Length: 291
Image 1 (cartoon, rainbow, N blue to C red):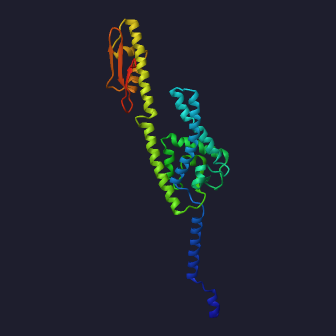
Image 2 (image 1 turned 60 degrees about the vertical axis):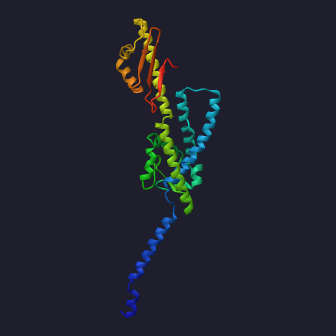
Image 3 (image 1 turned 180 degrees about the vertical axis):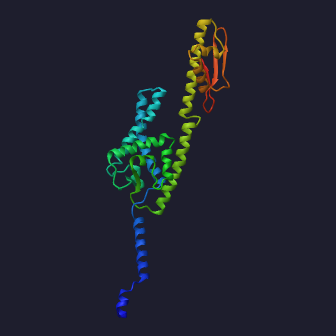
């Protein structure tokens, strides 16, 4: 074989390495140019926009309802939970079939199938919408999964087999703005949630005060029973608990809703006065008969 033929069949190692490097670079660029997983903060911004949109409409409904109807505390709690229904409907309709909710559209993200990248159907969109309820019901732990999962998938995404992707490219300033806004929303939401669940003015604390008042009313009823049988009132709580029919449960209920300190029964020939403190954050004083 002549030298010219040998040169034609000789393999150039440097050229081969160059082709491999170019192929890897093109592959990485194509991945970067393709759809990217949505970040946690921009997802949270979209959720706050959507939740706010539904909440405003529901508040208008409640305002009209309360104008003509005065519900009890238990009914108010159910009415407050009723906002979940329009939210689930809204999320279901505007997630299936390639549609996007207003918040996601403004932020530039979309929900797709985790395996195929195709839009979700109606049923899986409904499952994902209900998944929001489960994510929030377990003290928001379902949403915290998005911080640790590689694809930022929250509980509702695992339930529906979905992932949230970028729907359009974003510039540097838009990314910074969404990150800062999302961080601010997270801090405000966390503080608000803590205040509503554990703060002194939350509905949970008000419920504790109401339970304390109800229990004092039961004690007052037992006082009347005691006077009917024995002709006098008593300041002995144990005697009153024996009249309840289940003294062990009565004592448990007393310890559950009333603070140990501050409980007192004042008795006279004509009447009695019960003072106590509820087991809320403020240790609110409660009385029976009420002042």
